[in-house]
Amino acid sequence: MEGRPPDEQDLIERSCNGDTAAFGALVRIHQLAALRVAFLVVRDREEAEDVTQEAFVKAYGALGRFRSDSSLRPWLLQIVRNEALNRVRGRKRRELYTRQLFTESVPGGAAPSPETVLIADSSRGAVLAAMESLPEKYRSVLYHRYLVDLSEAEVAAVLGIPRGTVKSRTARGLGRMRAILGNAGWGPL
Amino acid sequence: MGAIVSHELDLVLDEIAAELVWPVDSVSVESSVLERLRIARPIRARHSTRLAYALIALLVVSIIIYLTPPARQAVANIFGAAGIHITIGGGPVDQAAVDLGLGTAISIDDLPGAMDFEPLIPAGSRLGPPDGVFVGGGGAEVNMAWEAKLEIPAAGGTGIGVLLTQSDVGLNGLEGVKTVPQASLVEAVLVDGVQGFWIEGAHTIVWVDDAGRELDETRRLAANVLLWSKDGVNLRLETTADLATALDLAESLG
Image (cartoon, rainbow over all chains, first blue to last red; front, side, top):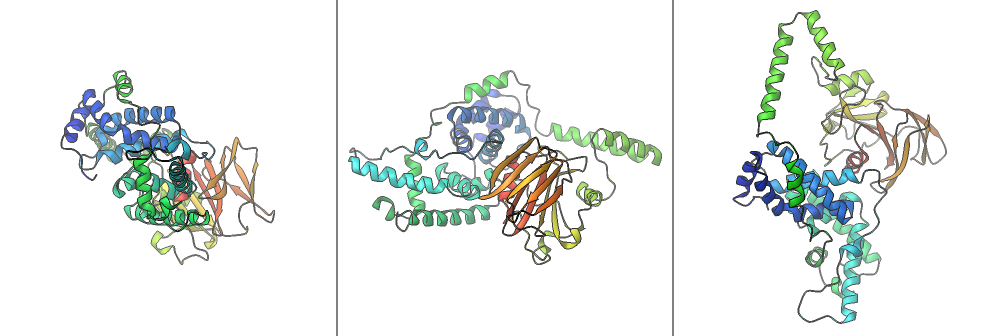
């Protein structure tokens, strides 16, 4: 997570020199994480796509200012998140989208019984709902850490907070979730 | 229910993440981005912009040095009229602290214990730590100021982009606001889980507490205002930034 693929530096240099095909390769590498980060903020597929496009265009224009000794992915994702936050300006608090985000598919070969699906779906749905109910500062850290699968350092860069704050908010956020789930009858976690 | 009881929560989250199907996973933006880049101007080579700015700054400094004092004042007036703030000694925040009467400068490290109440300290916002901290109102309030940045323009020619004022004087919590004259926008928002108000366009704001008492709040920067109350501290954040940036800073306070 901390470094980048050996050829990414070359792609960055070529992009800085106006090679849009090289930048296209960078887009391919990072678009999945970018789209997920955007979706977590705007909660709409088409708007997340639009936000991500706009963010990559801005990143291309700003690539000359990117520090070559740092990692590209958190820098890109920070631009994506800022663009997404600008889009939701003035919106009212977002409704829960845990059901849209979660699929009931269960890994493994045999099809699960309906009861198993129900238990798995509802328990995981409860976990996601508990995360969604957290204050923003905890929710955003946990979403990026666990659901987008970023490292602590990347979460810190994307959210613009110290790494120690990511660590403490992760611990506190998980603690709050345990309390919420315990109160809701999901037992100790 | 047993499916998650037997796991540590972080492991459950890892399992959930592995099973998630994101609505955006099938999207590809590469072709759209490249199409937009075809009609956009090419980017400048690395460092060229910075070098150009450095050369221009050097040229301007050289010109000012060789000008006579009256001419220097004239140049300052011209650049000032163009929105470029020229100060001699001290940054824009220090100058604004004098102009706006923000109070006496204090190190943020010395702030805990220096007041009769416990001011909230920003940690982890996108803006970073404040560029200046001042004790004002006869020791009754703390003002934290951030210099203007590219994305947060200076407010009212002060050189300040964000001004956060904290106090515990007079009122007990925030129940509502009145604005005089009518604001262009008053929006109820949640600030880190507590009630707050985002106000655009109002010149004077009246803060109402839970006992119905009122306090006039005249804006110092003629910018947008976020009002809320937390842990017994009344907070007023003035900024040219948007609501998302204001909330980011507000929610970083602890």
